[in-house]
Image (tube, rainbow, N blue to C red; front, side, top):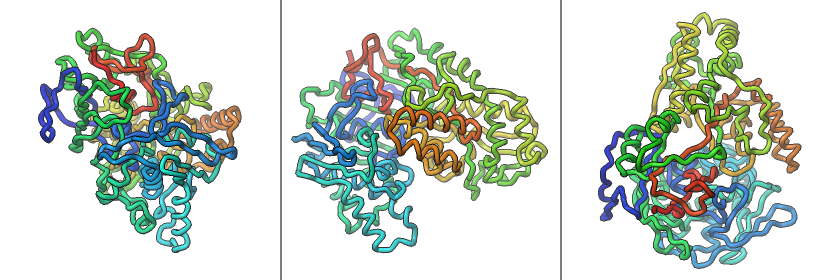
Amino acid sequence: MRKHLLKILALGLVGTMAFAATGPDTYVQMTYGEVDSLDPAQAYDTASGAILENIYETLYTYKGESITEYEPVLATDYSISDDGKTYTFKLRRDVLFHSGNKMTCRDVEYSIERLLVTNPGDSAGWFYAESLIGYDGVNAKDYFGEDASQEDLDKYWAAIDNSVECIDDYTVAFHLIKKDPSFFVKLMYTASSILDSQYAIENGEWSGTKADWYDWAGKDLRSGFLHSHDAGTGAYKLVKWDGKDVYAERFIGYWDYANKPQIQTVIIKVVDEQATRIQALKAGDADRITVNDRATLETQIRGMANAKILESDKWLGAAASAVFFNQKIAAEDNPMIGSGQLDGNGIPADFFKDVNVRKAFAYSFSQSAIIDDLYMGKAVPLTMALPPSFLGYDPNIPIYDLDMDKAEEYFKKAYDGKLWETGFSMTIAYNSGNTTRQTVAEVLKQNIEALNPNFKIEVKAMPWPQFLDAYKKGQLPALVLGWGADYADPDNFIYVFYHSNGYFAKKIGYNNAEMNKLIEEARSITDPAKRAELYSKVGYLAYEDVPVLPLPRPTGWMVLAKNVYTKMAPEGIDVYNNPMRSGSFLWKDIIKK
C-alpha cells in the first residue's frame, strides 16, 4: 500500500472542481496502499473496501461500533423461512442511484447474480456462491474447465437464475442451497453492494441474461467499466480515481434526507512516506493519517497542537495477520527464489513444504520483541489466525517465540541436513509504506542470517499493486499479509487461513486432510460449544503444522485532526470504530467542529 513523495499544500483541479485541503466541508485522509478496484464484485482488499463502503450500499449494515447489531439501508425489513434457506427483504422505495435511475428489485437481482456469474478467483464471490449455488464456490469456467457440456452449463446458469427472485419491484428473495446462519451478515460485505443495473449494462457490463453469462464467468473485472466508474446509491459519488488518489463528493440525491452529510468533498491521498503524512497533519493539510507504529505515535504525534490520538483497548479489530509460507512457489521467471534450486543461490518451489523449514522460521521470529519494541507493550500475541473476540479462539494454544537453539535444530533437520550445509537465498517482500510488515521481515532476516553465513534473505519493498499481483501469481516465497473479516463468524478466518480451498491456504498450497475435516465439520453445525471445540483442535493442529505464523495484534489507534468527530461516537471517544468497516467509520458520519 504505497508509493509517492508528495508535498500537500493544496490539491488541484479535478475536472472543473477545485479541492482545498482544508475547510469545514472537506475531509482529507492520507494513507498508504492504492485501491485495487472499485468494482464491488472484484475488490477484495481494505484500500478498495474503504472507498466502496461509502459510494455503494448494501441491504443492511452494522450499527455504529457493533458487529452484532444491524440497521436497514437499502432494505427496510427482512424475514427468514422456517427451514433457514430463504431470506426475503422488503426494499426501500425512492432510492436513486448516482445516475438518477431509481432502484428496484431488478438492481438487487442483477447485482448478486452478476457476483455469482463473474466470481473472479481473487474476489469475495466464493462465499456467496457457496451459500447460493454450491459448485465449491468457484465460477463456471474454473469449476468445469474445458470439459463442460451444455447440460452442465445450463444447470449452473439455472442455479444462479434461481438463487435470487424478485417477488415484486420492492421485494427480493434469496434461495440458499443449504442453511447458512452467516448468510445475513455476508450480505453486509461490500461485494454485495447494489449496482445500477441499467447504467452498468449500458456501459458494456454483463447483460444480466443467459445470452452472455458464460463469457463473463471468471472474468478479471479490472478491465471493465465498473472498475473505475461508480454505479452506487451511497452518500458520496466518485468524481475521480486516477489509479492512486480518490476524489468523491456528496451526492445531493441521497435518499436519507434527514441525515445529510456535513462533508462535501472527500479526498483519499496515497502517500507512502510516513514523514510526509505526519508533516501534512501538522500543517493542517490532512484530517486523518495512517501512522504505522506506536513509537512514531508517541514521539512525533502525541502533543502535536492540532492533532489527536484516539485509542481503546477494545480496538483489537476483527482482523488477523500472519507470515505466510508458500509451499508451491511459482518458479518461472521468478527472481525471488534465485536459482530455483537448493544450491545456496536460491530455493526450490516447494521449499516450505518441509515442516522443519516452517518451524525454523517460526522459532527465528521474536513475538515479544515486536510487542515490546514495535507496539510498546500494547499488543497481544495470537495463538491462532482468529481474532480473540471470535467464537472458538483458544488462548491456551502455545505460540512460537524467538528460540535460536530451536531454530538451528529445525534448520539442521530440514532436507535431511542439506539445507544447513548448502544454505539458501530468497526474498521476503512487503508492501511499500507498511513499516510494520517491513519490521517483521527484517526481524526474520536478521535472526536467520545470524544462524548461518550461508543463509541470505533480501527484504524487498513493492508498491501495493505489484505486491498484490506477485502474490496472486504465487511468486512470493514468504510474505506478511492480514485478513479483515468479511463477516462476523469464525469460519471467515479459519476456512480462509487453514482449509485447502480457503483464500489464503489455497494460494500458498497448504493441504492437510485432518485440518480440512475439522473445519468442514465446524461449518456443518450450529451449536456454538461444539464449534468452539472443533476450532480449538484446529488451532492446536495449526501450531504443530505451522502453515502460517500468526503475528501479534496491536490495540488500535487513530490519528486525526483535533476538529474531526463522527456521529454515534461512544462516550469518551470522539469517533466510532467498527472493525467490520475498512475505513473504521463512514464518511457520511464525519463532523468537523
